[in-house]
Image 1 (spheres, chains in turn brown, red):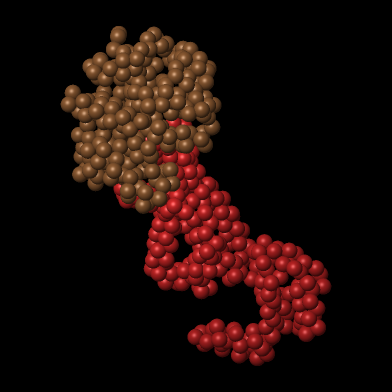
Image 2: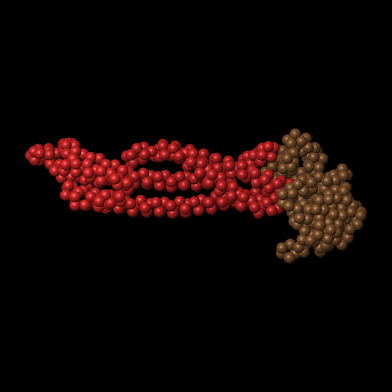
Length: 226
Length: 302
């Protein structure tokens, strides 16, 4: 599903964020990518959604080489990968419903399909009664669930969650992780980037550990080892 | 079609949800257009005023009473041949006498003096108009030939020469100042509009990057701003037209007094409403689209 071969990323400032990354993630996997701040976790996410291009190496997603993807193709890639960010990245002047519908509208989905799909994903994340609320009217956990609903709405095969629980308390963290596990049970590949030890240890899934821009550990049913 | 309708919907939503910023943008665009139109109107009025003064100026040739009809016909043919001459009127001796009497009918001593002379003391008069005031010099110089000089008792132009030169200088200066002001104003307006739109887009930079991250194409992000530019243009040009025509209703009666040739700014704007405001609308639309495109370039790199 996702294959990185010899991927390195050096920023214009000279900072080497990732070095010679070789990685395979199969369809339906739930992978946690862990590491301390500045180890290249977010750079890896940015490479996967083509926000950055690798300096060296090849990135393939579903057989599509996105290493030198053209800017016109980026929207099509992003419609196939659901992304969840630590800071939610919700459109502040749109309601919960509109935020989720927006991801379908940009993909050219019909109004009928949008009306059918948005309530369904809102129910999955437990926000059926908040559809007309604005982001500022929601708690952190509710905002993150909205972001997850948005990432789910076009039924992506991959969900990338970059520190989704970074701004949340323990209770909300548990809820978000439960939702991600549920999504994974439906067959969606989930890549969870985190430095939350409890979350990783509780999941008992594959763990990839980054340090200094390199993979230092990759184990099935792994634990947070730093 | 779906996409276009959605782009229009997003544009209207953005306008409504950023109503104060939208209002400010339309307000500044309207101010810019009003300033341009005020400057334009001043230029038109100056030209009309100069034209009105120019129309008052002519050269009158007063012939000696002994001048024959043949002399007059020859001189007329000679003068009409000049391409600069736009009009030539001839007054016979009798018409000149009658005109003199009409002019001085309230002055019995003048009329008495005229009657004492017995015979008509006036010769025929020729009134010449040219395209430009400076053309008179050429006509006068041509009439200084000895065969004409002995027939012409007086020329009225000498009295106007200084006034015409001054008027010409003032006109040229006004045109230069007007052009300078127009250029300065256009530059200031461009910078104000550019920065207003840049600020408007800067405030939405997070939204733009989020739209990119959820898979919106550049067209889907740029589209609403283009639609907003069209709406800003329609509103600002519409407001400008309404304000200008409203103001002209009030100004025109005063202009009718100042400009006796029946010139009306309202009629002038009506006659040029499509080209004049069409060009302004095109300029505003271009300005807003270029400004938003330049301001958005950085945000679209996400």
